[in-house]
Amino acid sequence: MQKIIISLLISSAIVSFFGCASPRYAYLNDGKNNNAPSSKTAASANKNQTNKHELRGEASWYGPGYHGKTTANGEKFNQNDMTAAHKTLPFNTKLKVTDLQTGRSVIVRVNDRGPYVDGRIIDLSKKAAERLGIKEKGTASVKLEIIK
Image (cartoon, rainbow, N blue to C red; front, side, top):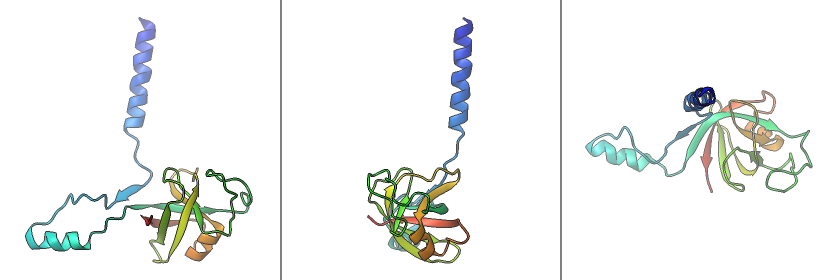
């Protein structure tokens, strides 16, 4: 009986913990128009809506300590390539990464997994961070658009 009660308590704690977890990044433009305006404005809203998926979150970068090491997809990491690490997107996904503060953007290819720091959505290669203009500050709020 005591084992059953302990088991139920542990199960309840696990469900409560994971059930209340919030996502680390927000999906935008999921193809649903949840606040659909009526009549003529609905047509213009749908006209402006794109079919790309967008994500927003915090970007960081990595490079020197990983240069030449094997990435999660098996290739050698080159900090001077326009690549990135993402936790779940398929390898070779091309992303447009836009700094929300400056409006600057770059195109990167996902070839690794990460980032492994809480609250981050993407790790850019050193080259991508330089071109985006975030290398010196280290992180930036970004929008990701899946291109292909």
